[in-house]
Amino acid sequence: MKSYTLSELLTVVQLALRGAFPNSYWVRAEISSISAKPSSHCYLELAESEQAADQPFAHKSNNAQPQFKAKIKANCWRSTWQQVSLTFERAVGMPLKVGMQVLAEVTVDFHPVYGLSLTIQDIDPSYSLGALAQQKEMTLQRLANEGVIDMQKSLRMPLLPQRLAVISASTAAGYEDFQNQLLHNAAGYAFRTTLFAATMQGDTAAASIISALDAIYSREQEFDAVVIIRGGGATTDLSAFDNYDLAYYCANFPLPIIAGIGHTRDVSVVDRVSFFSVKTPTAAAEYFIQRIAEQDEMLQLLSERLRQTAAFTRTLAAKLDQQQMRIRLLLQQRLQQRKHDLDIAEKTIELHSPERIFRMGYSLTTSGGRIIRHAEELQTGQRITTILGSGKVDSIVE
Image (cartoon, rainbow, N blue to C red; front, top):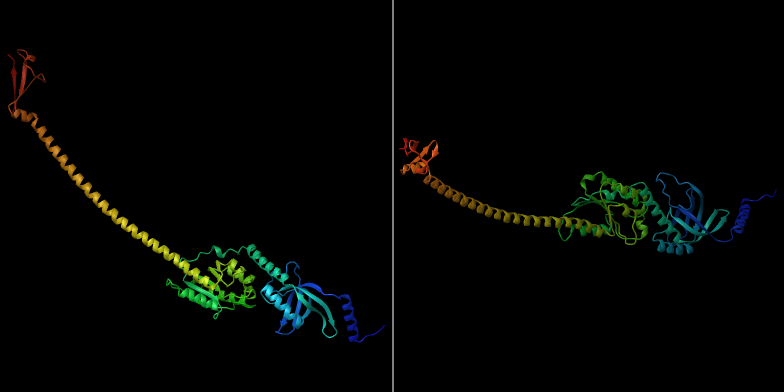
């Protein structure tokens, strides 16, 4: 059996691989590590996870160790890297980073010292854009399946939200814009803001914002609402707001969250799960000013209605007083008229009473209880009774 030195054997392997893979190939993979410096080469590690290839962004637990079916070193030499990275970032809006799915054109290389590796010739940005969109959709769908995507919408914003917990980078221009717009509003409405500083971009942003939310939760009774704000920036700066863990935390938060994270082209997952979202920090401030203005306007309207009601009540009371006086006067007039009528009736009765007639000398003659009006009614020998003004006389007709 022929023997080889190690270098000779590996050289045979190198030649065999060159013969077996003479061309470049497009490979779908995940970046598991990347190291690149400006104006230098880029060194990566590409991997394929155990999850299905058509689900490149299935969510993993933060504590779970990724399981890979394949891993390999990859290089992108400086002359190629400068062009590839620039084109990719312009198209996708973010640089290549760990966890990103890529479609790379590679050649297969083997070096007797450095082993098997791939050399990247190009990277297709459209594939990564599609994967990012797919990741966002899968995150939204997962939140929907878990029944939390609209939980913030069921909260009630206080009528006068003036105590605000603000999550932002302390030195961010967006935070200054928010404060200036809110605290120096033309109407002079009073607000109290408390800053919970957080990293608002990069790989640590999601964890930093969650930590700020934890701090707010411990003081929940001190606030009416939470504001998450940052200024504008590249899509890479906003990628943290599509993070599942952050979105889930926001969706379940007990205080209404207003998101103003400085973008105009797209809606992040945090935007979708928040109580309300606006495009800029300034718009977030205006949201609260407008809420107070609406209540102010309502109070002024109610005050005017109350004033009008009071005036109407006073007018109605005056009319009722007048009507009462008229009724009292009418009753008095009617009582006097009735008294006068009674006086006349009494006098009339008195004038026609039998007693008065008897006192005037008249008498009443009866026979057998029957009043005698004519002499022809009497017969000789008939007994009659004559009633006088005082006493009576019995007689016999002759």
